[in-house]
Structure formats: C-alpha cells, structure tokens
Length: 327
Image (cartoon, rainbow, N blue to C red; front, side, top):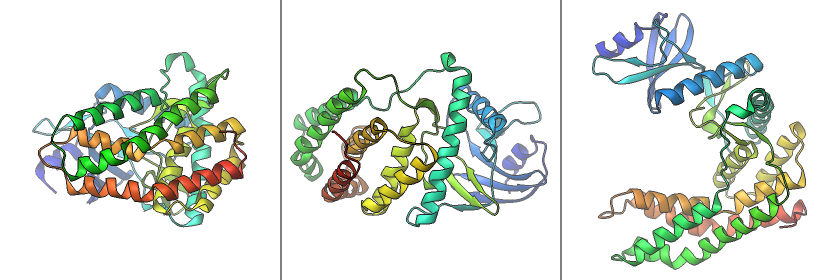
C-alpha cells in the first residue's frame, strides 16, 4: 500500500484490513464492509447530485447500491498529497452478471425493473426540479454523421475512410428513418415512462452477491424515458449473443412481467434499436482521435459493425413482426 493511498484511507472512519486493485479503482475490505476508492471523474456538483439521488433511492427501498461515503470532514471528495481527488463508495463482494446465461439475463432485467419502479417514485417526488434528457435526439446525431462524412471527403482518404464512406449512405438512411419514425411515435403523446434512468445499465453494472444483486456505476444517471435503460441492456446483450432473437424476446418478456409494456413502449424500443448507434459512436471516436493515425481497434470496430448489420436488421425485423408493431 503506497503512503499516498494510506493518507487517503485515513481520512475515512474505517480500518482497512485488505486492499486489492479493481477495474480503475482500489477495492478495500474494512471493518465497515467492502469499499471502493476511485479517482473522481466527474465534477463535484455532479457527484453531489449522485450522492443525493442514491440516498433517496435507499430511503425509497432500493438499498443495494454503491452509495457515496463522506470522509471524516463530511466531504465527498478526498485529496491525496498531490491534490488528486478520490471518492469512496460502498461496494460488494460478488461477480459481474453474465451476458450470455439466460438466468443471469433474467435476474438482471428483474433488477432493472425494480430499480425503475423505485427511481420513478423518487423522480415524481420533485419532477419540477429535474431537467429531462432526451436520448432520441436523432436529428442532432444525423447532423453529426453528415459532418463526419463532409470532413472525410475534404481530406486524404485512407482505407478506413474509404470503407466508412462506402457504407455511409446506408447507415445514414437508417438514421433518417429513425428520426422520422420517432416523430410519428411521439406525435400527440406525452413523454413516456418518465423517471430516473441508470444511464449505463449492463452486465458490468450488476453484481451477483451471496444473498442478492447489487447495482453499481450510477455516474451517468439522468431523468428521462426509463425504457432507454432497457434498450441499452438489450443492445449490449444482442451484441454479445450474435443478435439472437430469443435473447431479445427473453429480456422484453421478463421486463414486461414486472412493468407491463404498451405498443408505444415497444415501438420506442424498436426505434432505438433501429438507429445505427455503433456506427455513430465510431464516427465520434474518429473525430475525437488524432487524424494522422487510425487505431487498428477502430478499424476492427467498423468492420464488425458492417459485418453484423444484416444479423441486427433481421433480429429487429423479427421483433417488429412478432409484436405486430406498426412501424
């Protein structure tokens, strides 16, 4: 244990019995339970919002979460001797949920539904104080895609750019269709399923402990349509299961058994799945990277998105037809 980390540990009301390295963090066994110490990656005001949100979640009946723990001075952020900021959170001994095992998928979806029920109640306590985020800003995303294409066309074309441009029209047309479908879906409707969202709910965010599940990684939480969480989990699960329609069906039905889904809900999820999110993310990564060298990983991602597109399209068409969606 380094001296600088020992200094940070001593700022908290706990005795450290053992420490090990985790994913970008230090996992501590203490006399107060398992703790996680992680560098602060968000603003202090955002961290304060996360802290308050989690406290409300616990009070409302969803306690198995990585609550933020103040130090001895009541501060959420502790600095080491070099003024590096750290945050201590409650943590749990267990394993990440599997993304290919049916029982793990079902448990994680049931947990998501219970979180959504509680987080909706928390949101409804003070809805006027919360800014709602819309993840379906397809018009903005389509403008960004065009900007990437226009940038490429004005510069030297290498293999990556040539492949990207060869497939751009197809993926861009998918994005435009989503923009049109979404406008029809919400026409004359109030915003659906408003509540707090996890923001990054996937198999990395759920731990299976000895007695129950624990939910972590809330740093991207926001208020919005909670079905965006279900979509995010679906998208990750489909990618890891080669776009197996039965996986999609299992997840939808498990969530529906806890929170009944309407035709409008299913249309909303379908439109989100239809959008070429991976192609859009690759576009952003390209624009944010150095243009003098294309990382091989980015080339690999683009090739995989193109190769997987027919399987993805087939699966979401099955989704549309099975649930008789008018889209």
